[in-house]
Length: 206
Image 1 (cartoon, rainbow, N blue to C red):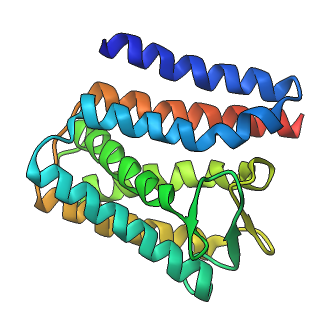
Image 2 (image 1 turned 120 degrees about the vertical axis):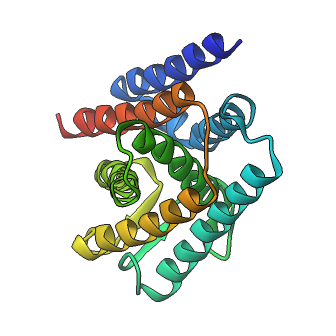
């Protein structure tokens, strides 16, 4: 079942890229919230988020993600002057509910990947935060086209600095709670998002 679920994960992302390349972005991009819900499904059943500790940690990261995005959107003091578009799902006070889910998924998966390659606390925190900021960099290149969010004047260096600081804090918390999970699921969930964002960036710049 796990293998089939992962194959389907890649199929829907590849199919979306092909469809968008053929000019059907108005069909595929509004389906993005359902794709993110599928990522959440994989996290719950295969990562697994099945203990009181991991559920609590996921909820904390999700709420933190929503909170920092609220501060960012309504004050411009964290990530810059930006607002969310229509393709990230339902919003509360301008903030998509699923953005918190995305923050939690990215923290969990990047943390497990970082722990696979490094042993030191500082190294894990730094690499985990770097992986999150790296994905965000490519997301910034497609956010306008995708209808996810829009920066007035573009995302500057302060956006990435704040991303790194917040991500590092979350990874430090994950280390404190000794977060563990499936390496296989983490690799696939992170790499499929990176693959899609880079692929879409190439498509819209050709």
